[in-house]
Image 1: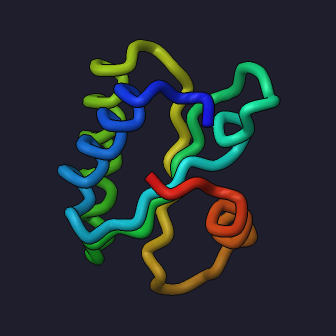
Image 2 (image 1 turned 90 degrees about the vertical axis):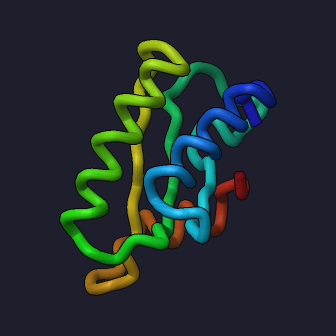
Image 3 (image 1 turned 135 degrees about the horizontal axis):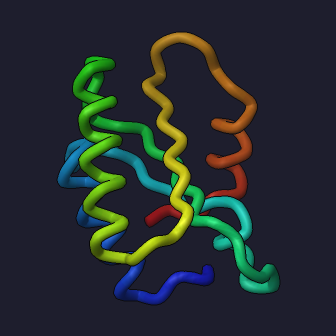
Length: 100
């Protein structure tokens, strides 16, 4: 995993604060691969929150807080509400991602 322990802790604290303590969090993509270079921070979330409006608000607030804490980095949040369409990215993130 190409995140420092401090970055991991910041990400975990921020996402659990905004999406709920029972949320599942995973890092996937190039940052989960120790042999890769560069890349954005790809995060998969199964939120404790269920209402769409609450999730949209949590996403915006979490991204603002993450950018303030981690600096200007490209951060992608993939949010699986488990209510409706199952996207292929959900499967990839769960299979290849590292739990935070």
